[in-house]
Length: 101
Image 1 (spheres, rainbow, N blue to C red):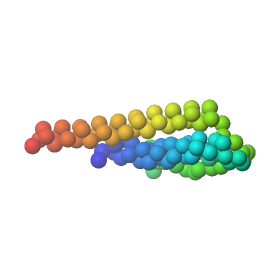
Image 2: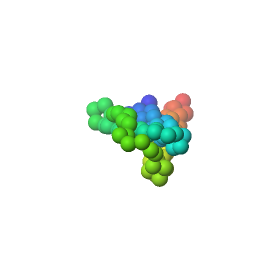
Image 3: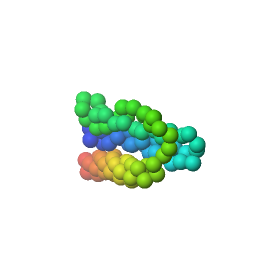
Image 4: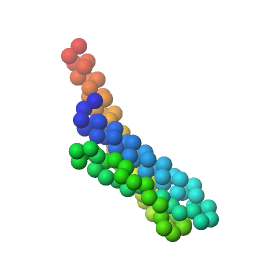
């Protein structure tokens, strides 16, 4: 797998975790006393890509649905872009292998 595709594959894991955290928060919107979680990102290895640095919990109870939905859209778009990158790298490798065969 190319370096760019590897970086995108790593990002898929990080963004997948963030989507899980957001889904958990939204599912608990009506749970009394529930304190939402937040996914914090950091640079990946050698400053390339992205990884989960921490999953932290809010100090105050409650879930702000508007904030969760905006985060869901942003994370979903980032996940989709990285999935497209991995798929394109895979297709390109297939074309190159067919060309030299």
